[in-house]
Length: 58
Image 1 (cartoon, one colour):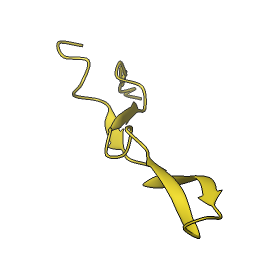
Image 2 (cartoon, helix red, strand yellow):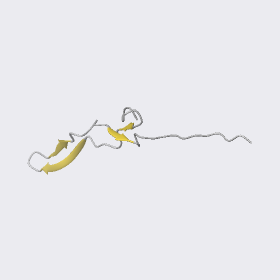
Image 3 (tube, rainbow, N blue to C red):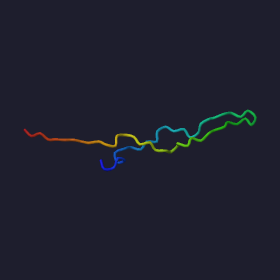
Image 4 (cartoon, rainbow, N blue to C red):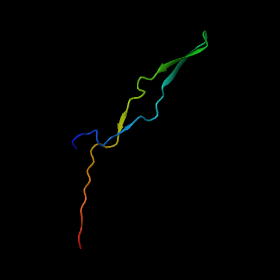
């Protein structure tokens, strides 16, 4: 509980590098757009976890 980034996992997930925007019929080429969020790490998991344990003697 001291640092909230210690208990999280870093996930890249499924990311598309480019997106097809349009087709130019004059030059017969596709026009692409680069995704600016590629490579951005998304934190996952629960950062705050507490474990409680005990022992019972008979």
